[in-house]
Length: 479
Ligand code: ATP
Ligand code: MN
Image (cartoon, rainbow, N blue to C red):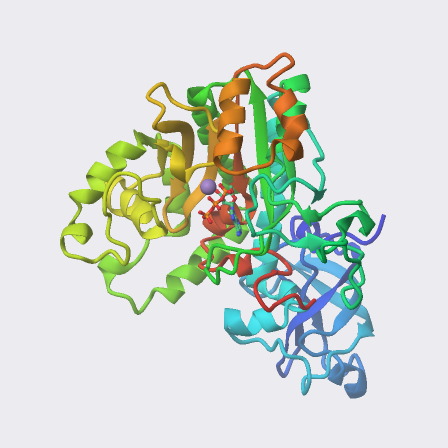
């Protein structure tokens, strides 16, 4: 089934056995006695070294072996003469599948800026940094499915196209087949969506939660893991217009259970990466350390692996929104006027600088904030007894801010309907959602984890655009 992967060949004992290696050239080096070609096929961060003798191949052929070209190398696996690798391939036959003209190929063996690499997203997976990120991303996705499968959750596929604008409030991408140059009109002159594909307005989903709840009301424990779309025009390092969200939803879970699950879940998937992505994490850690070399000692962040181990090994701090506001009001940046948005008092929506202060300066560990004011949270969250706060929980991470948002859901039909009216949603649009509270309602909870924010945390990357193969953000949808 295809050639051996370089990852496996590098682990094989060298016995002069014949091997075939296929991959892309990272570097070629010629000395008096030998020609060294470093090949990589993306299966590992490590290259395999292939060695030829001078004169073994024509100068013409060797000229086409350049960084980025693709080769099939046949040879013997031998113990490496040089240091840096255990085995190498003594080339007997060399075939160039595809050349990469050095005058044109943009990825030369030197450090490229992340901004530049974003402009060549079709080629950046061939760099060490991005191949490492993509392998870690894969490992985390696998760990997510494994975790939920082992815990008795069912993977529910919620729709990508939705007609309910329950959460979006203007942040949705419209889906339509109407001719924009010739829109059908009603008698009153409004756009006649009855003529549209679905006979009504439709959008790309901003969350699978509402449908996820329907699943939980039958299967007890479900999760979704799919693409999510938000047309928020926020050019931040933590927002994408298209991102992947993981949303578990559990019948018979209260807020405490929800917090316990969220904490255990992120710790387990990060542990999976620590165990299974050692080489890639080490590579990224060295890269980050290199980047921070010029910073004064006290401004450098923890080495990546220490930061991850720290999150895995320590309990998250849990406190209420109200307690957090008290801490923020008394904080140094608040008193010295250092917050861009000063904390004016109970009821404000926390901004990322506030969240990061709590996590990075005050508690120095991940924080779970609970019981937010109802006014700043979604309609479906369960009201607390005092009627002022809701059973919400946000998990806040160092460097990231909010990584998870969740809640216990309002299971009382009348209270939920009241909230639907309050926030101005037409109950007709969510009649099916409301019916779960009419027929066999139950306490239930769930949360949403932005997958890219998790990948960002684990890889230590500063910009979310660099942890998804082809990022979508305002004015950018190439590739
Ligand atoms: P934020 O306040 O950071 O914009 P949010 O409160 O709008 O996030 P939720 O609606 O609670 O986000 O979504 C659940 C999770 O999805 C968030 O905790 C976050 O991890 C992730 N998320 C939300 N918006 C984005 C986005 N635009 N790009 C990437 N991830 C996102
Ligand atoms: Mn949120």
